[in-house]
Image (tube, rainbow, N blue to C red; front, side, top):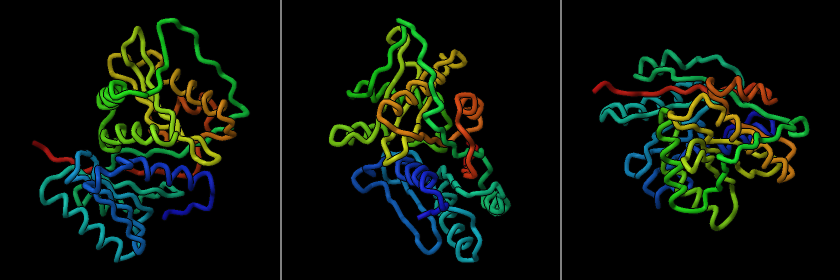
Amino acid sequence: MLNFNDEKLNKLVANFIHYMVDPKHDDGKQFIEIDYKNFFHHIDSRESKSNLNIVISSHLTTADQFAKAGEIIDQYHVNKTPFTWCTITVDNNQVEKSFFEKSGLQHFETALGMLIDLATFNTPNRENSDEQFQEVTSQTTVHDVVKVVNDAFDLSLIDLAKYQSIWELNQVQKISYLTILTKNNIPVSTGNLYFEPELAIIDDIATHSDHQKQGYAKEMLIHLLNQAKQANYQTAGLVATPDGLPLYEKLGFKTQKLYFNVYTMHYSK
């Protein structure tokens, strides 16, 4: 639905939208509305086990878009339901910011699309007998992933229900390599590598708060990049949060003209 005139960036955006939420949509309880007139992708999780309600769009420029946006936001505001809006654009001109603020949403962060040429990446993982990468192949390891992600992140852009569905989908067709890093058998970090056509996409890198600042996120990223190379990918991509940006740049990722501005609506108790 959103087109940025670059095949790899379009795949990165499409993956972001598709796996932002439970890809099985909780047997229809998670409502997905694609508004082709206004270019809105609306995910309504109020009746499902998922925790994320979000609209993804490009810039709001027309009166119809602003009117429709107001209607959607009011649906959540009236019942004080957490809600997120994410604009994806090729510039960082936040022309919608004042509209969102008047509607009760605050700017949360700006993430960046990034790509790496895997031919330039030649970093091995460190050797440590106490550390082990374990692919998520059981219900127990799915729960471990959810536990780490839930601890590590603000849930404005994380749907915890999606990990169960990704694991289930992987039993039928290998869509991704979802993995967890353990230290002395304790889960410390997670990561996911999506096998998109011609582009490996990295997501869900999270480290439990008890184990942060110890290099585990870096180890996970290196591991996933090496997995992508072993799968014969030439390019890998990801959406970088401000906290992760320095690490990604250090390992060779290049920022693209692709900006993900996140606005969230929370309520005081």
